[in-house]
Image 1 (tube, helix red, strand yellow):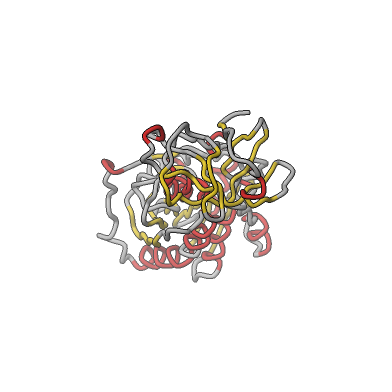
Image 2 (cartoon, rainbow, N blue to C red; image 1 turned 90 degrees about the vertical axis):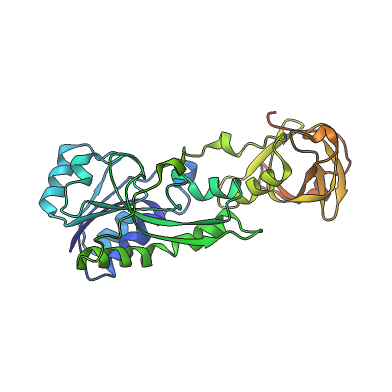
Length: 317
């Protein structure tokens, strides 16, 4: 088959490499220009450079709605479009253009976690599995029929970085399997409609989404820290007006009462911060901060940084 590809960053790069390694012909690649957005500078393997290295025509676009792109797509004559991490909606005149339509590769177990940063949101929410889904694109974002889906378990200490590597390794086998099914006609009867009653849709993450709210339960805060692992922008709080980035934390063994955000007591290799909406009852665990990073990039064990107990960590300076 002749395949056109829409994609960006490492997810798109892995998808294009899988297409180049296949028996199918890559006729055209469309990708975004480089971005200064914090999350788009992470995992930023260049789709454009990979396409150019293999002499595949490539177009750089922020949006897909200009006549030049549509004309180039028509002239490339694809049997199928494959998309992965294309950051804007594709119109029907694009996704319905090839005979086999458009296959979108999305890094969640659809119908849950459609949209953006699904691994981070799933880890924060305590999901037991994450994964990758190949589905047919339609007029609703990440809502089309599913062809192939693969999952990996989430371990109790996994970070978003761990889960990124585990799920991105699923892209190539999923792309190969999906294209083989479509090319041979064995996809007939395999497309499964999504259960829209189970659908959820998440927005792009920003600096606000990494801000620690000490009224959250300690269990969720611990997952937030793991979800904002390096190289992602870390979960952060403020101490005496200065931003602290929390790089390692745990749920306390003891239960601590008082006001959320209170710097309370040492426990093990860290310092307990009172947390939770019911913290005043004394029946809630706190968050044990183990390691932190100051704005100048210096890293500290929490027990070295907080030499005396008392005072508060706050959501704002």
